Image (cartoon, rainbow, N blue to C red; front, side, top):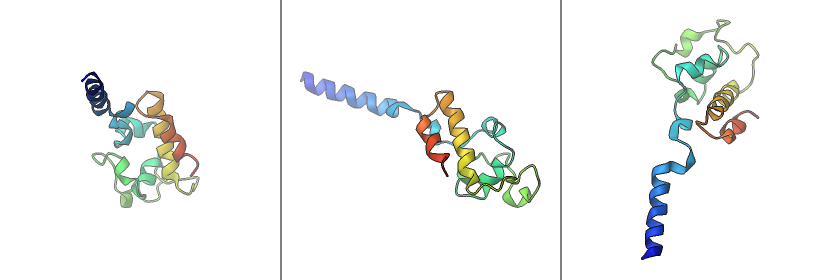
Length: 109
């Protein structure tokens, strides 16, 4: 019975702790997080498959972003959304809200 109690306890810890990091690491970036990124990152997210990574409550549509210098990827970085996601995830990791490995896997693109 003692062994069963340990297994139940272990299961409960794993179920309620979620493996160490909260699901915040997979959630959309907040407006405050977006403000810490280069201005063209919102545009880069909107035209990519990472569109779900940004909050759409205050975001401009990709068609409205146009080619304005404030929203355009001035460096023409291929896969700029990966760079932006890497920086945002790095900032989250610094605050203890996610693993550094998430950021590191985005940056080489």
